[in-house]
Amino acid sequence: MITRVIDSSLRRASGSLLGLAYGDALGRPTEFLTVAEIHRRYGPSGPRELEGDPALVTDDTQMALAVAWALHDAPALTPAAVEPLLRERFLAWAVSPDNNRAPGMTCLRACAELSRGVRWQEATVAGSKGCGANMRVTPVGLLAVDLDTLAGLAQLQAGLTHGHPTGLAASELTAYAVRLLRDGAALAELPALLTDRAREQRRVYRSDWLGDLWQRPGVDSPQEFIARGWDECLGALGRLTTTLTRPDDGDDPCRRTGEGWVAEEALATALLCALWHADDPVGALARGATTAGDSDSIAALAGAFVGAAHGLPAWPTDWATRIEYADQLAALAAGLD
Image (cartoon, rainbow, N blue to C red; front, side, top):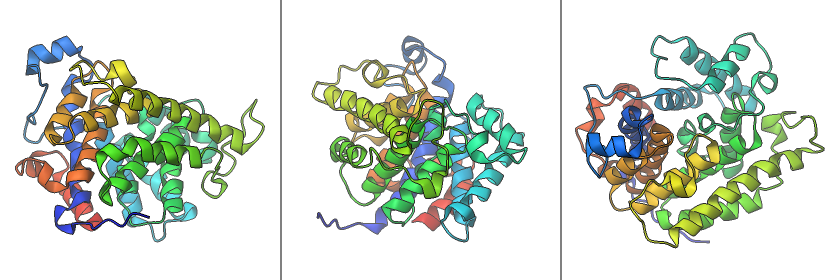
């Protein structure tokens, strides 16, 4: 076992949570643009400065805050304690006047069912593995909990809206990546560490957290159900690993690891941006925002990863007061640090 010495002065939780919001804000205006259009508007390096005061975010940050507050308010980190709070926060988001940032249809559909009091295993959109499952999971990775609890929380928060096994597995891997980085792992270590985790967990179905979510037509066992998700994540990690053996060609990272609209691609492409710009945190956000895919989600996850690796000093100091929801982000991050 490797023992790492953690420098608490880096405030890695703050760096990660704020990094998510910063990436989201930089990717918000580029999400539906082509790479050529982004270059014309921002130059070849993409957007590197926050726009507006406050700099607006999207539903990615809004829902990450919903998860963070649910965890903050939970009397215990158990399924029975956390699920009602996640439901409450998701429903509050769904009807908020601020929910006007092109929210994902999967989240809206699931929240409509949750609002009727339906069991979450029935309210979820069973076939969706959209990146909404893992764009909001960063707060789970910043908790000081054991890995089984981390995995259960990550999959539960995903499962309330996205019932596809790949959404569950990718969310766990995203939270695990944040945990590893906060604990001092190097960014370059992540592809191998995440691949190992995916192989170890391939047939682990967390029934205490997921209940009977696995019961679908054509699925014979919970192990078969969850293995499908881990296998798709392993495929995405394989593409990431192959890409990293080649020089960065400066092109759209989505051409290598996917456009990020689905969970495993959002994870892989965000990691690619973080790894290609491991020593330039703002550059990692800009690269994530300069894609033809789901730019805000890719840049948000890249920010969560690079921020966990480098801590709060990774980011321009004035951004902390200019980002939308600055007070909430600061309060939650301080508690997690």
